[in-house]
Length: 278
Image 1: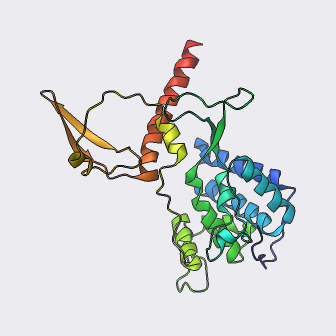
Image 2: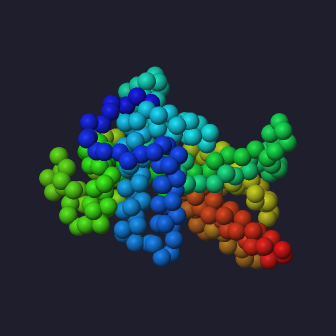
Image 3: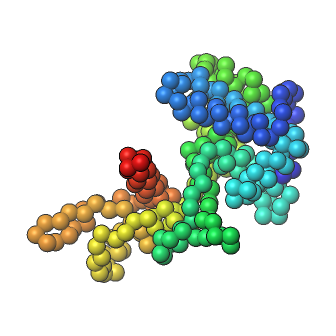
């Protein structure tokens, strides 16, 4: 990665990339704890993200170490020297935020549903990122691009005063949604929107066994929003006749999020049953 270095004079108190990643992960744990769900804990979490972003942009060793960690997780770092990014404006912090939170999941064959094995016989794993943290890549870029150090983030996000930013007459409200929107305006680009039915989605859906199978005509299929062979609908059964009452209109990742929520419920139920049996 070789972005233009930030000219901010923000002082870094950085040991190494691992400590920054660990600090960010601990901030997430604190944020998720029931007793810590507050505006201040959220602000501290964001401050740790911004601190990591500052170091990633300005300290070569941290950049290399975090990029290497991204590769280990199957996430491609953004290298602005690469021809593929020519004429584009990618968020260099997005890969970093993709490894902050998530789980390693078994890779299963999309046809058989059986685990895929490595050469040594172990089950192949794939990193499933927590996409809810992707928005913070825009938040990091906003603070770093505007020369606002991580040491000021907590006060800003816990206060009520708008953030004075050039080009925004009334400033930017100290809320995550407003900051993300302001970053989008400053970068003059649309927010990232994934519409592809990913391999991760197909893997998640493979755990379901068909309840029943029916032949469906082409005319009926045209009325459904189908994404890679899947659709979310509500059906009604009466007198032996099945009627499709509601077509959700969900496609791609939006459809996957609904299915993945159910997959998580199945996994949690399975884990609970195992613990109870033990």
